[in-house]
Length: 107
Length: 118
Image (cartoon, rainbow over all chains, first blue to last red; front, side):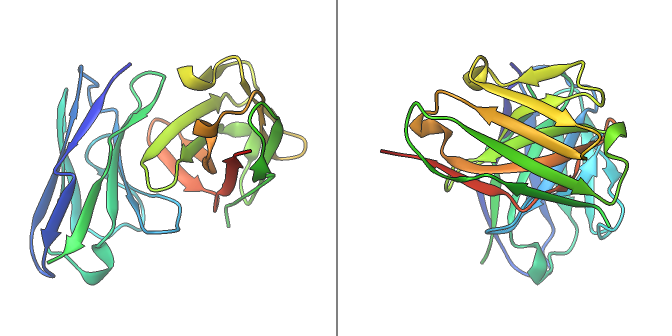
């Protein structure tokens, strides 16, 4: 199985900050990577697919990059609504696997 | 509007069985892969199973193989997860999710909580 490792596990930041979350795959997944945002008690929401494509309706302050084994999710200027938990997910092969999550907290 | 509505969760005993259902609307159900994803309390997301549009291909995470069965009824726009030989570690919120072609899970249900405990 392909293991997905996110860092950091927790990130404290302020409104207006630029933040980056990293996701590493245990083997190459080309660009078959998605990012999700999840708020407490809610289902996840797709943000980015194919590593760098912005899902329709997602604000342009979110961006993704990377290929192979290393990927990043960047939020260019944090807004109050962005404080949530973020997950990466590989879909190169079954079993699909998620990273353990990065909780973005208000500093 | 795309909607996915899960049902069937509750409190179940170890070794027991249940069937989760997911009613889909607002899109052509028969043209999408569908999946179940779960989240144990306070934990991260875990993909559980996926099924092809016509039901001809099914995939499972190792921890549920031989115990869970994913199925669908395209005439009823419904997805199912038959869960047998339940274990405490199956306790989780179970989400039904639509797989958008080579792009990710683009729509999710609200989730249904399954608790396995004696």
